[in-house]
Length: 100
Image (cartoon, rainbow, N blue to C red; front, side, top):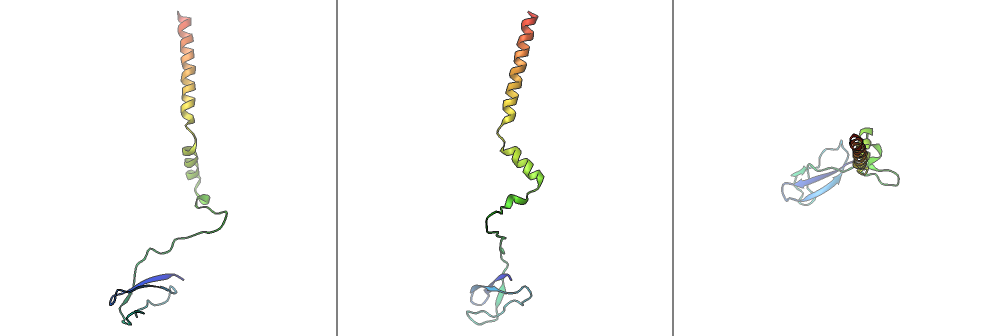
């Protein structure tokens, strides 16, 4: 059962009530007794999972997991590029010495 927020239009009193979804909104203010209470639009409750073993990321899509793992890897692409350029530099220096 949800908790609803109310405000009295007569005395500006705010309160919350734990009611069934099917229940009619309360009209009578508990503070002043006038029938000027209105149910307010609220942010609602968030889903909270408490306990060991559950994390919000447990049920992520495979594409999200792949993108996250690619972002978390160290810049390995740069080191392989450097080693390739040094190899190509060696071969070009060898080819230039053989040409001389």
